[in-house]
Image (tube, rainbow, N blue to C red):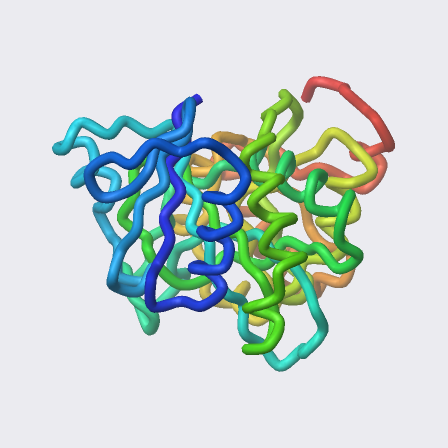
Amino acid sequence: MNITIVSSLKDPASVNIRNKLLDSARWEPVDKGYEYEGFRLIEIDASHLYQDGIDGKMEDEGIQSDLIIFVSRHEGKDKRSMLTVHFTGNISDAKFGGQARELAVAAPLAARALLLSLKSYHDEVTMEATHHAPSSLHTPSLYVEIGSTKNQWCLEAPARTIASAILTLKVASGRVAIGLGGPHYARRLTKLIFDSDIAFGHIFPDYALYQVDEFMLQQAFEKSGTSLAYFDLRTSAQQRDRLCHLIQKLGCTVLQEGDISANSHKNL
């Protein structure tokens, strides 16, 4: 698998992770970055948020990618030290780059592999709901981040953990579902990833469910590569009933809690 890692020189956590990547392997300098076995490390001067079409631009320069990993900082009200993984896209307006009502192509099984590796070395690891840009990417992509404060962005240990998880990434097969409901920090879905063979693609949290219509659901299924959906246990009955009707209309399937059991490899 050809993996391209995108580091923003404007992002201190991104630079920190880049430095640990360079320290961890014998990279060869190439045009606009570095190369090591199947990895390409690209440095950009702009924000990650405004990289719609970066995969097409790289292809025009002869760089083929099976997966794009954006290494970044995570900033939130929760000040705890955490490592986060998420996919990108805008459920409604494009407030932070990208296009309105557009989702990037997700990489669920790669995200699961990264989360499992990160969890081996760090206590607080979680998936987040889909948010912000870039959204116009045809190559599977994900964000992996250091959170949540300026001091933590520059710590060596979390950056080294992320660098190691990326360079040892081995993607295994498994079931994939989109996630619906729950909080922005998708801790229930993350726990299911750790306890079973399930992986999650795009995740729409409680606060955004009212904006999810048939068009957005169809995008989520297609760009996550699945026809399965899972509702967080705390999802309101009203939203669950509305979305279940749309999921059925699309010919897709809702996984029940009992369908996701520890170490289950049942094909649905």
